[in-house]
Image 1: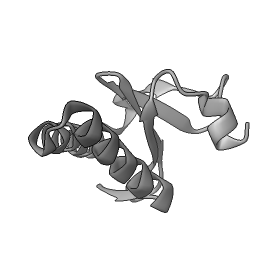
Image 2: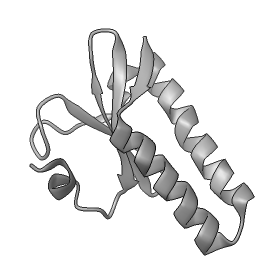
Image 3: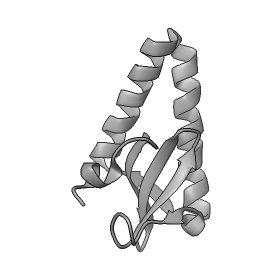
Image 4: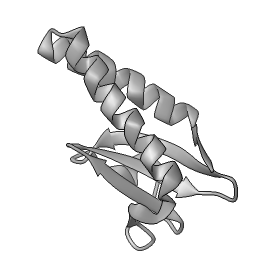
Length: 99
């Protein structure tokens, strides 16, 4: 099992890094946060079903996994864990997904 990032998830990571670097004034802090989030991607590849099921409130088949104040939104596929988005937990995820 491996993980893949949707283009939206790649953009989310870039946006998170930029925001944290700007707000904290530290590239190192931004790098550490991205490292922490991406380490969780590896955890999800080993334990695909560890995240919270979001069938009822988002879409069937979606799961979320918290990393600090961020949520990894993902779906388990036949061969991979597909990371769809990485967003702040306060974000309107339903609107983001068009649910």
